[in-house]
Image (cartoon, rainbow, N blue to C red):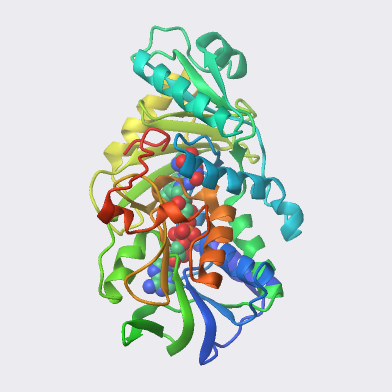
Length: 409
Ligand code: FAD
Ligand code: PYC
C-alpha cells in the first residue's frame, strides 16, 4: 500500500497540475475514484464545463477503484441494467484511444459457471435476455467450458460440479489504476481541478439547496451543483446532507498469488462456490471472494472468507494447490437492496448521488461517469439513468440484479 502511494505520488507529480482550490466552482465532484474522475472528464469533454473540481480525501484511485479485480462485462438480466452496462462496454471498447492512455482493456471473455439445474436455467434466461438486448452471450455445456479452460475440474465429481456457464466473449479485464490515471490526466488537461488529500466533512445547505462543501484541509468551497461519488462512504455523505440512503457498506476482499507462467487466458466466476479467478499480465492469479457479511468501513475483511474462497478455487482448479498467496486486501462496497446503483437527484436541490455499485462498479466506470455527467450538467436524468433514481426504494420499482451480480452477497 505504501509503495502504491509513493508510486502514485510520483505519477501525480509527473502527470498533473496540483491546483489550490478556488472559492467557487460550477460543479464539485466528491470522490476521486474512477467514477468521480470519469464524471469530471465527461463534464468537461462532453458538456464543455470548465469550472469543475474533484475533491478526494486520499489519493486518486485509492478506494475501490484501485482495489478491485478488474472484471468488465455487461451480461445483466434486466433491460435497465443491461443497457447501462452495455453503454459502459461500448465506451470501454474505445477508451484507450479516447484518453490516449493505455487502460489495457483485454476482451478475453468471462465465464459465469452454473453448478445445478436452477443455475443453468437462470443462465439460459439471462443469456436469452442479453441477446434480445443486442449483448453478446452464449450458453456453454461442461465440455465447452473444459475446452476454454483446460485447468478447470469439469469431471462432475466435485462438491459443486460444473454443469455449464454463460460466456460473454466481449467481456474481460482492464488495468484499474490506469483507468483512474487516464481519466484524471484527461480531466486535468481539460481544466478540471483535482484536489487530493482533502476530505469533505460537511455539505453546506441553504434554503433546501446544496451550495458547497466544507473540507478538513481547505475550508469551505462553494458550488453550483455537487455530485457525490464516494462508493462505500456514500451513506456518510448522505448523512451530512440530512437524509439516509438504502445502502449497506460491506468489506469485499481479494488476493493475488505469486506470479506464475500463463495458465488461464480468460476469467472464470462462480457465484455459488464464492470465488472467481483470472490471470494478470504479470502472471499473478487474481482471485476474489464474496462479501463479508458484516457492515464495516475498515477496507479489510475477515480470514474465514478468504479461507473459504481458497477452498473453492482449489476445488475448481486443483493445479493451483501449491501456488502461494502473495497479497490480500479489502475494499468497502456500497450494496443496495436490489444490487443496482443509484444515479440520482436527492431530496436536497443541486445535490446528486452516484453510488450503490456494490461489488460490480468497476465495469461500469466509463458509462457511470458519462451518464452522471449528463445528470449533473442538465439536472435531470437521461433514459439510461432514470430507472436508477434513489426514489425507487420508496415507490418499489426495483431492478433486482442479484442473480447477475457475479459475486456472492
Ligand atoms: P471508489 O474508487 O471507492 O472512489 C470513491 C472515492 O471517494 C474514494 O477514493 C474515497 O477516498 C473518496 N471519498 C469517500 N469519502 C470522501 C469524503 N468525505 N471526501 C472526499 N473523498 C471521499 N467491480 C467490477 O465491476 N469488477 C470487479 O472485478 C470488481 N472487483 C472488486 C473486488 C474488490 C475486492 C472490491 C473491493 C470491489 C470490486 N468491484 C468490482 C467493485 C468496484 O471496485 C467498485 O464498484 C468501483 O470501483 C467503485 O468505483 P468508485 O469510483 O465509485 O469508488
Ligand atoms: O461484477 O463482475 C463483477 C465482479 C467480479 C468481481 C467482483 N465483481
